[in-house]
Length: 294
Ligand code: GUN
Image (cartoon, rainbow, N blue to C red; front, side, top):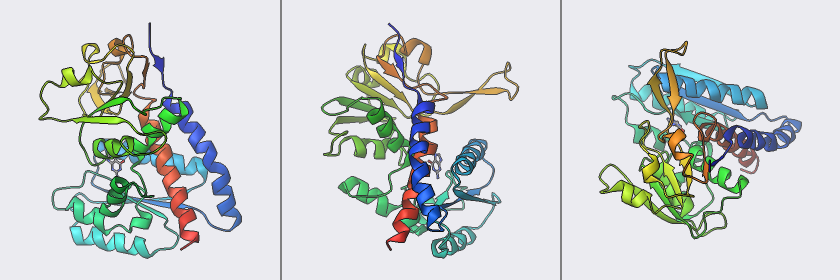
């Protein structure tokens, strides 16, 4: 039996549609939600990610500005730009694309973004609130996975969820969201990482397996319990001469083999990646709405 494919394109379109009346009501008040993205250097994956963000903003009528800085930009220049954006009332969301070049301290930069405009949810204030179970901006990728669960009638409550990957962007916030004492969460979470012993023994115990490693085909069919739900967060470029651009995008899961074992699975592309963009748009609209009551 082949797994149900969880359609990230369709679900993210629903999320985007739900935002339209909220944006229209802001516009009636003369307010356009505004997102500013800062990129330092020209990392190809980051460039394609910010292009998708720009397109989504355009589609929804969200104001979008991209500030492109040279690879060798000094840290203080970046901090000065962020300080100006923090003070600019037309900017509701600020996103600094990661990774940043070596001369820049990521932590310092993320800390300098006003928590009220931190639509990525990466600043220590929002990360702390997430752990404490308080209202905050939640990082778009793990939040997108939660949205996929709720819109696909997959309830993590009481399930054993195994996450592979402990990044601040995905693995850690994903674990925090799933372990919350809250409807739609309440899962038992195991987080595996590069020093975990016998990963396949652990993943085979998962009711829901979430892969966020950044390695093509890391999750094989043997690592998946029959009937498990498999969420693939990886976005990896692999060489492919048959494609005009010379590469194709694959996830962290051996999709063809795993879909024969799992009960449901997200594809790459067309899965979680789409959700990330939609949830970022949602956070931007939320930041704009919040600004009215401040
Ligand atoms: N790099 C990879 N994913 C992300 C993301 O969601 N936000 C930012 N700012 N950088 C990223």
